[in-house]
Amino acid sequence: MMLTRKDEERTVLDDESRIAALPVAPPALLRDRPTTERGTRTRAALVAAARKVFERSGYLDARLIDIAKEAGCATGSFYTYFANKEEVFAAVLEVARDDMMHPGMGRVAGADDPYAVLEASNRAYLAAYQRNAKLMGLMEQVAHIDPEFRKFRSERANAFIRRNARGIADLQSRGIADTTLDPMTASIALSGMVSRLAYSLFTLREGEVDGRSPEFDQIVATVTDLWANALKFPDRL
Image 1 (cartoon, helix red, strand yellow):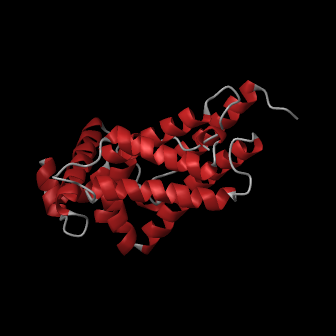
Image 2 (tube, rainbow, N blue to C red):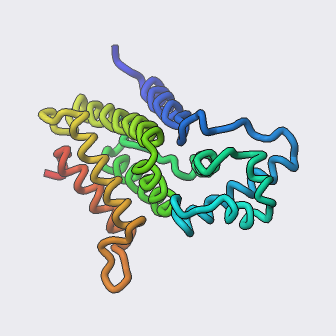
C-alpha cells in the first residue's frame, strides 16, 4: 500500500510524539507537584537553584544546604518537596526537557531534500546540546555513579537510536542511502559520533585553539557531510 503525503506526515508526528513523551529521569524520582501557588513557586525556586549549584559544583560536590541557600529557602523547606539529591536532579532534568529535545533523522517525505533534513536535524541537536552543555555533562557524571540512572539513560538513548535507524531504513527504501548498510548498526555508529563530538566540544571544551572552538556552522556542516558520506547519498559520491 502506498503512503500518501498526509500518511507520511502523520507517521513522523506519531514518532515524534512517542519520543517527546519519554521521561528524562526515572519516573520513581519524580514526585507529584505542589497544588498551591506558594508551593509551586518554592519548588520552582529550588529546582532553578539546584541547576545552578549542580552546574557550578558538580553532582558529587553539590550540597542540599547550598541549593536551599541559593533558592533563599530554609534547608528544612527542601525536604517538603524533595527527599534527596537524586529527586531534585530528576526535577532539574524534567524542567529542562523541552529545551533538550531535538529532532532525529526521521522519515524524509518524497519532496524533501534529504541532505537539508539531515542538516536541520544535526543543527537542532547540536544547538540544544550547546545550550545545555553543563547539564549534559552532569548527566554523564550521574550515569557513571548511579546504576539505575545509567540503565534508564541507556533505554532513552536506545529510543533515539531506533528512531534514527528507521530514518536510515526509509532512505534506503527510497534509493537515497546505501542498502548494504545495516540501519541499526549505522545508526549506533553515526548517532554515537555526533553525541560524543558534542560532549567533547561543548562540555569538555576539547579541540580549542587559542581558547576558541570551531565555528558552530562548521561543526554542523562537517557532521552532516560525515553522515551523508557514510550513507552514500547519491549527490555526495
